[in-house]
Image (cartoon, rainbow, N blue to C red; front, side):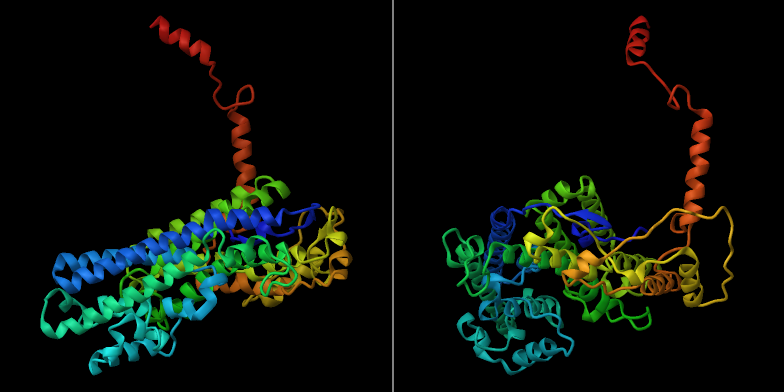
Length: 476
């Protein structure tokens, strides 16, 4: 499987020219008006529908009303997932992010507090005003998920008197979530203080002193969105093995919305990349690379969409687990590559504009012999190095003095890469096939090239003249 270096596509790879200027103001404008603002508006619209569905269920319980609120919940999760990657601006005030989505919850605080409030019939959770003053574990989507899908949730449609408290609690959470989403959407409105600071930062602003700071914030959202899926959403439930999998650590496992949540996260990353302006920067720097980024993002999204089993089954089913582990490997190595891009965006323009930098370190420059010895030492079995072919007299000497003089230091070594590949092969995360063995793949391509050359005629396998074909067709 081809490794996915999504953030690396925005990175200085090999010898990379740093162009004179990035229009940070245009990036901020595009991100706000095409991504952030529409995203939160969509969330607010869905939370309003969720509140309405909750009120309808409590007013007239039925299976149809229960289905309506579950559909509204799923729509809210979908819209939330696309803006979840943004951990800046008004969502960070008044603990809004935690109040809306208290996750991860490794200690099971929500699992204890929600049933406890139900058992005690704590009436302070029945009004959004008083609910907002209680624990964040009681206020948001995970708590509402428990009420709609947890133990006893099927009784919500019965209309029994004792169920009224549970429904009232759910309606209060829906109201609270709607208020939070609406407040964040309003704070991002045109002319609002958050929008002004985001679009026109100044030296006295508390968050962003210069337009470049906003670009860095957006890029961090891009990389952290990928890491969120890789390390948190996939890593936590997968565990170290199928036997040690922990599916109940996954987000939205009760409602079977775990994978749609991850899909939404990566769709948010994709939207930020395309509509937020980063794709244009990549295209200008390295034409065609933006298409590769989109291909890899789309592939990751399609893999997650194709999982048709609940998370509890997927992390233990060998076939599904292999796909998820392969995806996790594919989303790896982002943090270090993203750090280089962020570093260069933050560097003094006078020192980097129009310059070419090699990204790496002297420690990672090897001749083939020493590199083969590193591989042989780290592979967990006996390895014999075989030499064949003519000596390669090409020079691969490169220097990293320029980028290191700016303070950059590579964090990973060739040994780190060997260990990662060995671990992936040993665990089955990557299959050992012709396509994953470089030399075998080159031999296969050479073989097919020879076959094509042996059958091609006038530069093609089949040469047809459109005009001639039309004439023949007319004659018939």
